[in-house]
Length: 294
Image 1 (cartoon, rainbow, N blue to C red):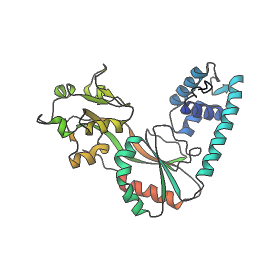
Image 2: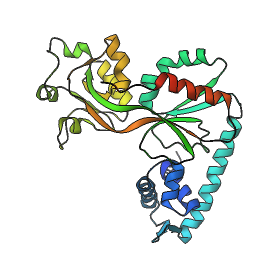
Image 3: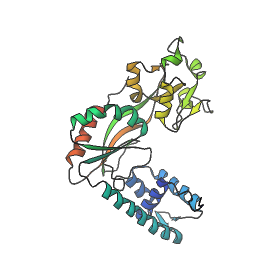
Image 4: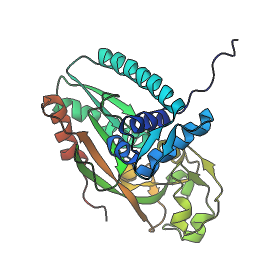
């Protein structure tokens, strides 16, 4: 096997670098990518560490590309343009509406209601992209996104808050068996805990140390493990409400944790309206926005 193939730099790092290279400002790049200035700076540092040399000169106001950074920026821009053109060709169909959501949101909220959406908007070609990665609305041809994010928003985006993150501990009733509910925090801490990449358990218990238990890179996987009786997961109540109502999961403690940021529906403001995008946007607002869960 050829050893030619080498690990590529992370896509998020390349995207942050390209935006910062065009804007010559981490802040302007952050506004364009709908993330914080610190997130852009971190991604650029990751890329510089991967490559092994600086790409920017940090100036009192803004940044400037180094000579090597300038060469790399031209090549990365050309590569992104090629990807963008290929994507546009692939998604030329005007009826396609692309919605980018987190994996947990896709699995626990959007997909269970997909048939309702398709019935409400017949003939629509909905493309769902489940990813935690930053969505570039133009390059990725994304029409609508659901993301965890903070106020305020750049003016070029239209937003609608869907719900806050109210975290509750849940488990399969088969795992709980005859254990009396609600459990105390002390007894809950002795249960097999299921962790995801957000690592909310330490904050839930008010501790700082590492807690034992299986770790998953996605909330949806931790919830699948909870449904299978493998342990107790902690997740946004909106994600588990259907399973709680159906009895597939039970809330094992009365304690909960409100964390930021909130879940928002986001789309880029455009001069020309697309009926199908508007229809999906309005359906999401009517069906996915929840009142504050008590």
